[in-house]
Length: 379
Image (cartoon, rainbow, N blue to C red; front, top):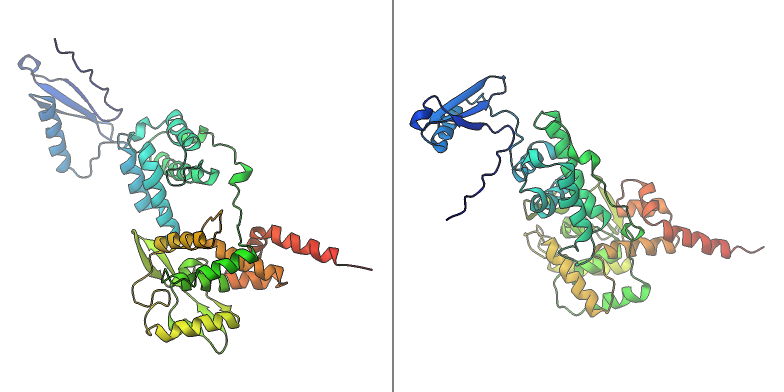
């Protein structure tokens, strides 16, 4: 005898099937509570027919909704929220980063649940605890505190909105416990040593990648990766020895596009030395007027590919513990500080939003240089 399949309980607020007036003839009724508090019912020979009649009626009455959206799949709800609410006030780069976080973590871990079924225990075990206990899919290492907190913050903000508009009655994130931030999770810079920097520059002379020139430029100027790849010939002022930085390359809708402003919305002049001047002079010979210096054509650079190639160059230079292309920017900043350049000038060259941010980022280097100066003080 074939075992009967147990029917799953319908989610709260999605209506219910009950015997209709013609129960003797085997008719079924679908009953739903509308937002105005009134009940509406639809009869059919089967549950499918009764429910279809309800949906047909709903299409003819667009102002009548099914009530709270608590039965919506969270994958649909969070994506809709991000497009209509969550992205408001966000910079393009932050918006794209949040979309990646939703795609990578929020939807795979919580998207299969209906909004009404997202309780504190589910968010704790299926999102926070899983990310804490499972290794990162890309690096194979434990997820950092910030990696875990980003999807949590998105879910929390989305559910706060759901409470505000009445789709759910309370926010289950309020009682979720995040792991403690470990000291190793704190963002640490990794500048190259002088010896590593020399080996890196030598590795860039091999000619295995067209982007080796970009790596040298970043090391010489401290430009952000997107800023370096957004430069055109008109941005270079050789006689005055400065670069006009006013744009960047960003990821948008899974493509890399030019953005006519920097990360901090501040245009700046980045001054350079004679070695950088020679590097730029040679590049300008081959770069058409309306093309990017980074790749010598009108198409934007694939920043993801640029990051992968950087690690290949580091491997050739026998540099270990590589964290990313931003290491070159840190190396430039550290070099300036060690050579006695004041922190305000360093901050301006890097394009930081504030001098205090520069101090916070390079506090260890600044403190080390202060200690050296004190050691040199003799009476």
